[in-house]
Amino acid sequence: MGSLIDHPVLVLNRYWQPVHTCAVRRAVHLVCLGHAHVVQVDGEEIFQTHNWESWVERSGKVLAGEVIHTVRVGVHVPKVIVLAFFERLPRPEVKFTRRNVFVRDRFTCQYCAEVLPESRLNLDHVIPRDKGGRTTWQNIVTSCVRCNTRKANKLPHEAGMHPLSKPIAPRWRPLYGLREHGMADPSWAKFLDPSAENVKLSA
Image (cartoon, rainbow, N blue to C red; front, side):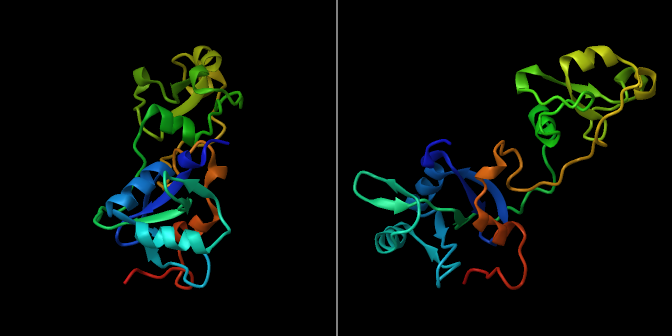
């Protein structure tokens, strides 16, 4: 497990919609500058927002929770922050990149099912380009170098090699791209899967 300062924090836009994640160090910096507020995710005053001064004050009163230390004080690690000025809506789709294809496929070769490090993975066109295949989410899968070489420019039925899962464009979520999904805090569920009974809007 990495340092607390590098742990992910869920970032909400000013409409309280999840837009991405950032490291604790970045979250603290934004709060100190007044560009964001910490969202309280527990206790009787859940969903209350705090600027830096009130977050330091609350940290001094509540003993439970993970703490990081600045030069002068110890403060609780923020789990969620809400930006004061950022109005952009969540991205409607995941950007098509080599690494995002690996993330979608869980770093697993779609032909032999072997899980491998990025350095040993490749991208394969299910329908080869010279047979009309396009470079899109629906036609690109993760493959190991061995399977990629074996399939070459053959169609799936010609090579007898079919992807384990049908390639589709993944749904965008703020967690997308986090290699260690276990790092997501349980408190994020209130914002990632909101319902009328567990989410309140800011004043």
